[in-house]
Amino acid sequence: MRLLSVIIPSYNTELYIERCLDSLLYDEEIIDKLDIIIVNDGSSDKTPKIAKKYQESFPKTITVINKENGGHGSTVNAGLKIAKGKYLKIIDSDDWVNVFDFSDFVKRLEEVDDDLVITDYVQSVLYDGIEDRVSFFHGDDSSKPIDQIRDISCPNGVDFALSIHAITVKTEKLKEVWGEGLLEHTFYVDMQFAAKVLECTKTFRTLDYTIYVYFIGRPDQSVADFFRRRSDHERVLRWIVTELDSGEVQESEFLTFMLKLMLKSMINTHYEAYYQTLEATRDQLQEIFDFDVFLMARCPDLHNGLSAAYGLRRRLSPMRRFLKRKWLTM
Image 1 (cartoon, one colour):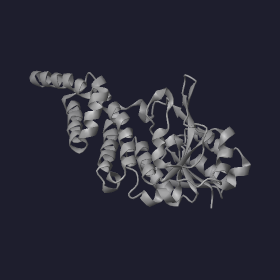
Image 2 (cartoon, one colour):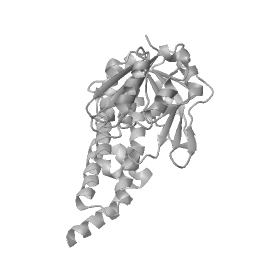
Image 3 (spheres, one colour):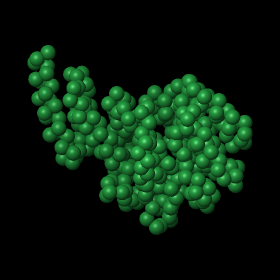
């Protein structure tokens, strides 16, 4: 069995994918321990040609899947079906790994047996040249029960939220809870992925390695065009809220706690996007009101808590007054 499967979702990243693959293949000692799955999501540039070239050079390590465009979630769904490593990690093709830590990290996976391994990552901002390390390590890499994950702190004192960039998960454990998989043709499924990882995790550990380098700032990235893709964000939000109603989640105090923690930040971002859009149309404002009704009906305690924490009711009140005036003048 290979130690680590790496799924690389790839769509029109001919400028970046070689950097990603070179970082993974930097140390010859670990190449035989890797199971690299490049999923070409219907690219129209040279991405599939580059992927094929690397597959020909490393036929025992690299597999290429060419498929019609279906979004990030569909690439993970396709890659997981054939993943054969003990552990699994998602590395987007425009990101890369820190070569100085990655080799030691892969070798360390041979020694551990936890369902989830959490490592630090770096956010590298395009153009500005800024790098911001997100650290979770507290000097203890022992195995711990999953409910202790709530004790992990993040920079700036914010609540811990499990990021896809920090996740390395047991492949077989994830397959057990995968079901229909991630939403397709949908942005922002990284939080859905994290929710599924939490569902299959019984034990975890943090390791003192900085593995993932997250390259942000490209104009075509989802974070750069949130409002246009707000329906995708709401789709993922509604999926996680619905998960909170499932019997299995209700039986787990910890999983409920973590899902609500994820939702806090996502929901605040969702409301804020509408609040900041001063030229919102009547239909757009109706969208956020409809979601507000959905959230109150499905998860009233979370809705009330968010209203207190982020002032959502205070924000919605002037929006409702604005909408009423706008309707009267149309």
